[in-house]
Image (cartoon, rainbow, N blue to C red; front, side, top):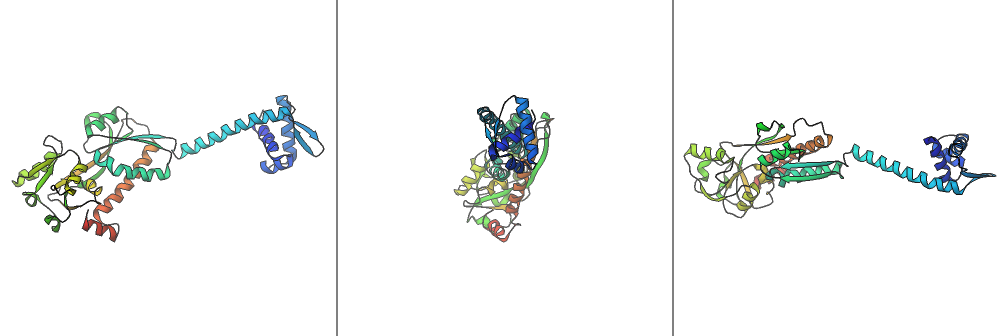
Length: 314
């Protein structure tokens, strides 16, 4: 039994005649009649009563047509599955990111990604770099975004961004009138810091120690998002990754460059020996596009409106 035989039978049942079926299948009427005859011979079923000028389905023909319809429904399901696979919509992705990235950059990336792959399933995890590294190494996550690399794991990695820290302060703060802020400007200001035992504190600490300046640390928090919220409440100033401040540009904060420069890095990490994964690759492409847009917002280079936003806020 060939597919062409079944296809001809289905076309006749749906159209009512071999002539109409031939038009649907872009073939000749004799070819359709021949396929029907061959199908009846192979199946051992009389599918039609031949009456003058028309074919009338027999009970066997009607029963067989029900089975054919089920089979074609299965083929349509396979076609849809193939389409989903082509656009990765049937796939799943697990992403882990430090909180700074998980709160803003990742949701914006998913919005862009979902425009092309709306049915893709994405799971988001957040934690410190050490936890994320372990998750990626254990293949719990397909991709991770961390602020520090641990070479001991031997994971595949690439630099996602390198960006200079900014000083964030409440809107209307007297330091907002300066083009940049240095250690001496912050000396007497209420300062919001990373906890003293947190990795990353030393980079800021070293600059102030070298300048011989003590800070008035009145609040400590591990998360840049909380830092920016505290600043928006007028509780102090802080030095943060500008991507964190970007997520709070709608609040009452402003930022100014901090000098001498403190670098913040973001790294993409992948399981070692991972096969090429188109879903991951396309997610990373979306991530990099969104990050480029964010950096335009930070620099104000994309439009006059954004330049005004940078002057007034970020």
